Amino acid sequence: MRLTPHQQDVIRQAARDCFGRGASVTLFGSRTDDSARGGDIDLLIATDMSDVEEIVRAEIHFQVKVQQALGEQKIDLLIDYPGRGEHPPIFEIAARTGVRL
Image 1 (cartoon, one colour):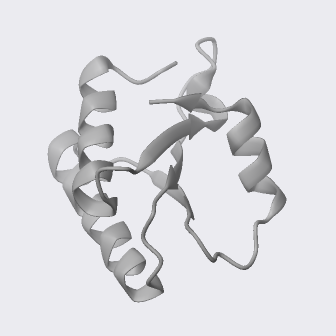
Image 2: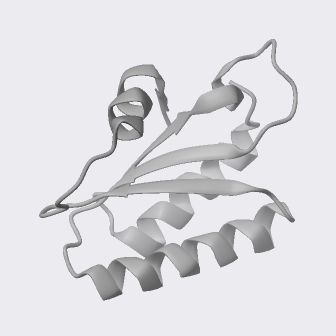
C-alpha cells in the first residue's frame, strides 16, 4: 500500500469525524499496488448516515480536512450508505480488491 502510516491515520480520523464513528474506509485502485507510481487516492467510505444532504456536507468536510492535513492530493471518493439506490460496478471492485484502512 502506498500510503504512509500518517496518511492512513489522517484519512481514518477524517472519515470518523465527518461520516461518524462507525464509518469504514477502504483504499482501492493504484495506491494498493506497491510497485506502481503516482495515482489518485481512491477511497470507498461506508457510513451509517442516510440523509443525502448531510452526506454531501460530510464529503466536502472530509476533502477539506484531508487536504489541510496532507496537502493537495487528488482524492476520489465512493460513498456507500443505507438506502443508496444504485451501486455501480466500481463499488464491488473497490470492496473486492481494496485494503481496509
